[in-house]
Length: 325
Image 1 (cartoon, rainbow, N blue to C red):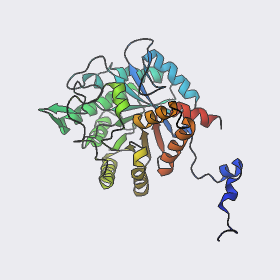
Image 2: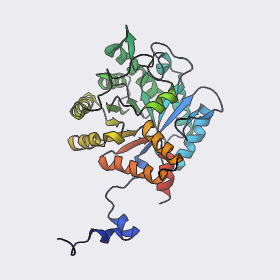
Image 3: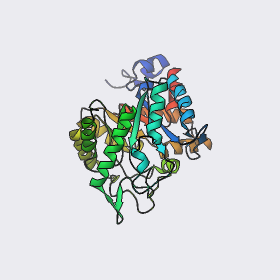
Image 4: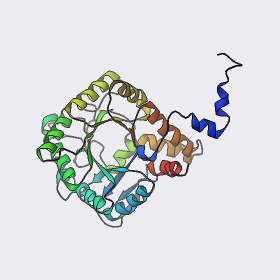
């Protein structure tokens, strides 16, 4: 029916009408908040490249997460900064490592919180790569054993879900086998299935001091240009036992999220990464954009593309808006 009989603006004239026909609804239940844990006591140090995000000692972590839970954010994902680093990332799979202790502290204090853990060696290795390095090469298969040990140690400490982010071939299957062999069959795996070799990770690497000491991560993370390859990665992770698949980064890869949503009937998560977050913060600080409106537009676009779960540093700020709507 052509104009003037059909007027699309009719349903845009009032807030109530716009809300009634809204096609994509963002909820606090969609959000996961990434958090950074350090050794020590009474530490809450802002990460300069990620305003409003902090390095937290265990005692302060529990305090902050209690505030997060009051905002109806159901889950956090933890990243640890070890006391020391070595070639094989030893603290990543130690029983008293920073993440293992963090899980126990959170589950003791906030038992209904969903605690997700990142499973990767990059924060713990002296060379900053996500796997074992031999003669300058990142070795795939030897890395799988360490990732499996790390995932099992997290699950035994009380983690509700493990999230391998390393992009080694076969790691989902190896972790699933290791968990099952330890009687941890009910621990789900959220795989970073399509993780791209992106330039948007800079602030995160600053936060955990994990930039590679040589080379880059293009031999294991995906080329940004390849969407068919991303679909193959997702398919393989599903076959190996992934319960949720992630696309990372989110904002520049909305087309990948959409394709995965159309192709696979599985929960999808997307990581609104540190560089995406920092750009909004920087532009808002300069007065060039409305931070809250841009934040909500970005998060809505990620969900509209097909993500069921959004990992984002905006989680507390977004939740404040959502709970007061």
